[in-house]
Length: 146
Image (cartoon, rainbow, N blue to C red; front, top):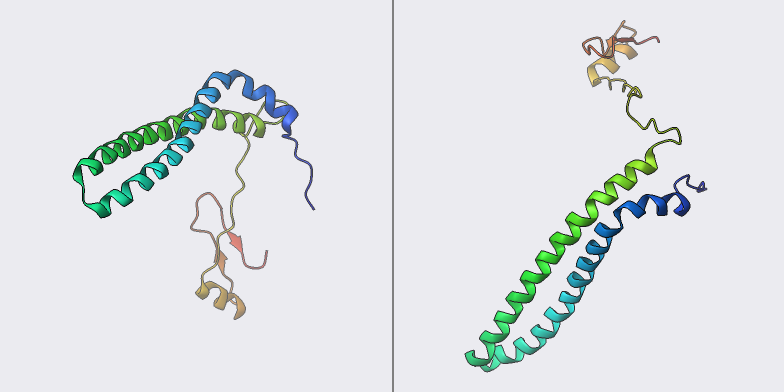
């Protein structure tokens, strides 16, 4: 079953407040990005029948509009990505920090046990004394019987 999260909305909203301006501009860029998709579809609806007619006088202005809208869309996408990434990272780091504020810094990283090779497993099954991980300086070795 799912357990309730310690990082609920009550804890999230105060963390967003310092980033309100950046989030607003990022949200505006998001609206421009999504709206430009609709404009591009509308322009394509105008462009495709004109392509069939072969009239360059009607095709070229629409292609120019498509390029302008596409450029606006990509600028808005860049703005959305760059403006929303910073607050998202800072808020997620704040949510991961325990109540005391110590965070993850300074906590020891658990060492993974080395996975024995096929040859080492075969030797262990044969009853030979095998030392796994003795070549790893951070591990210090683990005898097969331990």
